[in-house]
Length: 171
Image 1: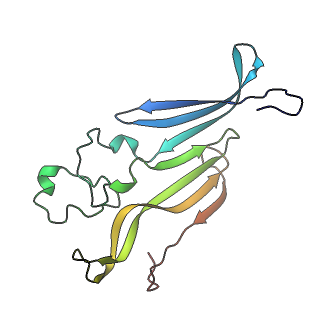
Image 2: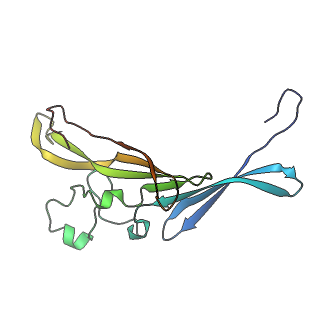
């Protein structure tokens, strides 16, 4: 990056990954590499936390729902269960982003929930079936909360999301 006088400016992003069975981004450090020769000045640091990351199985051959999300259990138990392809609202959130800690000291906390549906297309694709609110694949945001510090001493704001079906039933 340069300005009109051709003075160069640069920002360096260092990404730190942790590996606990699965690799995940844990920290982003922002540095100004042009301040001192061979020594970058740290501008700020973002720390990322995930929801129950250690509970995600290491093996990629794990039971999944119809949408491909981990559904818990093991294949031997699930082969006997006709509902084994149903989404599990607990397991689908494992490993999702839980919190970002900012260089300023504040944090943003994310709460996700499983998608839900009240209708689905029959496998023969000839009719739509009504059902009670069932869980679908994937996640949606339930709330975003901003805090003053990592210890969550003072809530600064909270945004809660409410989803409704077309027949006005709320989830």
